[in-house]
Length: 422
Picture 1 (tube, one colour):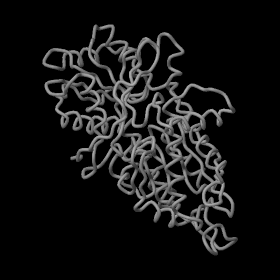
Picture 2 (cartoon, rainbow, N blue to C red):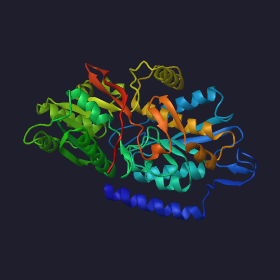
Picture 3 (cartoon, rainbow, N blue to C red):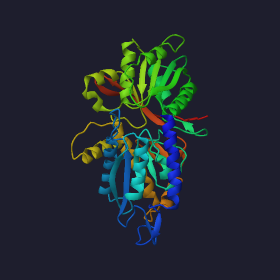
Picture 4 (cartoon, helix red, strand yellow):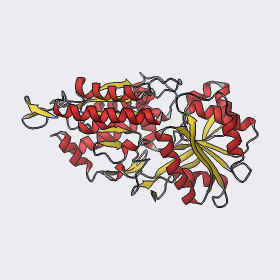
């Protein structure tokens, strides 16, 4: 899979270069004023800003991030109810489904820009982002969860909680190792095993988290991006055997999975059946919808989930507002909250904050100028700052534990000083 993703990325770059000379999505052209003086700005009219999204609504393994779209819708609806952004309403046309397919991700990006003529893409939530080069080439402000390298470095692409997979010279968020250390009652002398999918994102995740846990004082006894990304293994015995013997022939104190829910269920179930008694943790399984099935609830019971935002259990007034916004977007229905909703919500929130700062004369140039030196404090992801967020994370997070059928905060939302990534 890594090879195919790289190949598709190369194709994306080539297509972007061709389209630069003959593009249907020019930034500006003569015509009716749309916020850019005597120019028409793509996706910007006198009274609206058109925004679209790219979300893995479906996938071959059944995993879905569809509620990311609902979260974005909720934030845009509130923005419009409050009068829009500098007099313009947000025309959110919804998200394209990329099916976690690299080719579809690029196709979705091209459609949003060349056919739908959006000003921005927010949210972008997928494990593949082959459309990144195209969006950067076309100068499309894009917002999503910064778990992919494309959110770290490009000028027009922003992570809602910063860059989580930095290049050397950037920094690493220490929420996970610091949180696991608190759960274990200390870090010194403790060991951790880290496992990820065999993909570009998995390989990079292993590299960053290995450094983060080591810097915190852990012994990293196992760190492999070895689980096939295309399908969930039916037999986890080989992985379990390697992990349970990785700490000098003994089990590590904690097992950290950098994978999605179907893989986590399989791995954690196999570890428990093998008698593992240590800490289990992942960054994805904060979803009350997972509790509807007894088998899933049992498999994830006791797991500490990494969050990079305030937990839903928080009494922060902004969390109460988020819940009210989600209910309104769901037609007044109480729906189970999940982290995908907040991914969409905070991606939209960061876009709105920068667009508001850009002022009435909204163009890509004015938007980018507003992003330079942008900062605010006390959000659901902590303090935000750009362009620092394009190379560093915002450094905040929490851990929640699934216990007896419900989530409880095991480590409160806290900000940690990031460490340099080398």
